[in-house]
Length: 284
Image (cartoon, rainbow, N blue to C red; front, side, top):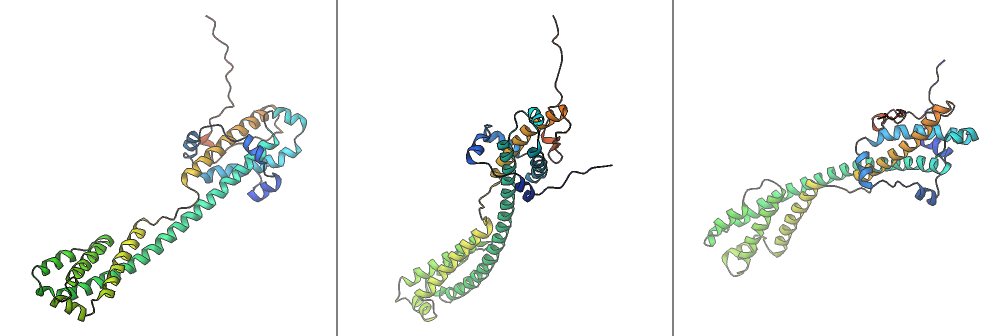
């Protein structure tokens, strides 16, 4: 006859194990440096830790209320508060993973939206640039060197930044022409609709191209949970798992009715501490 380990969920485990008080949580906070916890936590995916944590939490949540005085004698070092902290630090990690994954989805959606807005602004910017160049070309012969200035300002557009720069430079040429409102070039631009209001519209377009391009190239919606946060919580959970496993697995050797906590998904993270040397010191 074979037996299988029950499948536990966080809902079922939390129904068995109440949350620790703040004093209990503070009592069992890890004393290891955060850098060490983060280093250890970064070596394994959070999901693997959660796989073993929820299973351990279920086993302990079912066993501890039924533990006899004899059991508890073997389990010296384990306690109800430690069980609470163990389980709820695991649930905290599960919540952080869910929030981190949600933030990643939001970041991707935000980036896609930013790219769509930027692409539209780019198309509008290119159209406006062509309109402005056409208007300026119409008066380029009226002032010495104006044709060369328009050519330099038009430049070569390869991306959002160069398009914004081209628009800004062309607007400056138009403003310079309008500095002498009595000139033929200024009057012709005014007659053609390139007035102060239209120039402001070109300036707004240049600013929009620049800002939306920057958002599209580096759109990052910062979530509340970072990878560093996850690594730290991973390390804290691994530390608690190590502590609880040592107590229970050594107790299991003395009393097989006490459950053994065998890591599966996180097995590589734990060096076996079950084998203890009994060498007799060598006599000289």
